[in-house]
Structures are given as C-alpha cells and as structure tokens.
Image (cartoon, rainbow, N blue to C red):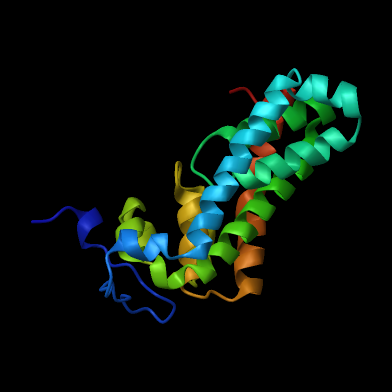
Length: 208
C-alpha cells in the first residue's frame, strides 16, 4: 500500500487532476522559457543585494548611513528573497522589526512577503506550460493537496506549511490561473500571522 502522501491527488481549479505529460523534456522547456531565466536573474539580484547590505555593515549600519530609505531597501530585498525557499527573507524582516519596532516591523514584513507572492504568481502564470506541477506539489502534505488549488483553504493553509509551502502555493496558483483577487486576499490573510510572529520575536514580545 502506498503512503497517504503518494495517494493524495493534486487538484486543478475545477477539482480534476491536471495532466503532467509534456512533449519536450523539462530541461529543454526551462531553457527556452524567458520566465525561468527571469527567475534565475532575480536570484542573482538577491545574492548581490544581500552581499551589498552585508558589505555596508548590515541593516543597522545601512539605516545609519541612508536613513529611512533603508526600510524600503530591506523590504525590496525581502520581496525578492521571499520568492525562494531560503531564510533570507525572514532574516530581512527580522532586521526591519528590530530597527522599527513591532507594528512597523509587522507592516514591513507583510509588505515584503506580499510583493514576493505577487511576483512569483506573475512569473508562474507566464511559466505555466513549463511547470511540472504534479511533481512539485508532491512536496505538499496530502491533506493540503486534497483541496482544489483555487480553494481558499489551499491558498491560505498551504502557505502555512513550513519550508517551500509559500512558494508552492504561488507556483500552483499562478500556473493554474487562480483569479488574482482571490489569490491576493488569501495571501494577505495567510501572510499576516507570520509577519506578526517574526516582528514579535524580533522585538521581544514573543519568546522564540
């Protein structure tokens, strides 16, 4: 008998399992995708931005040097880093909360992750033909994959899955064409608890 994770179906917008057959190998489709190259370019920008912030003495020194625009710089870097399943986005949100306090820190973290969600959703819509969604979504728990991708339960709860949960929700929603308004309000709701938690830990209101 197969484990539950392998048996759970991946639903498309209408509740059916989307086809996974592709005419060309995945590597060939990705190499020919402008969105894939954009995704790689953004990764290079993230690495450059993190190095630049570090070379200027970190977030605190950056604020002392440029003033309030440092918050916008950190949010922009967080937005780009948030498109990848790496902790850089969380660290940048943490730094903003330390510098600006709980409420501003939460608002800035929320803004950064919302921008990341919308950017990845937009790229995924353009990469829809190149995304092997069935294979990617196997990383999601079976109970999440039982919901259609357009269902608010998938869009909200899936983003709360540790690790690649947010990126997989962005990818699935964009690739399968979830309406932008539904995707946006679900992202706004599901991102808020994480932003509050990061800001609370950074400012000492929540014990890690």
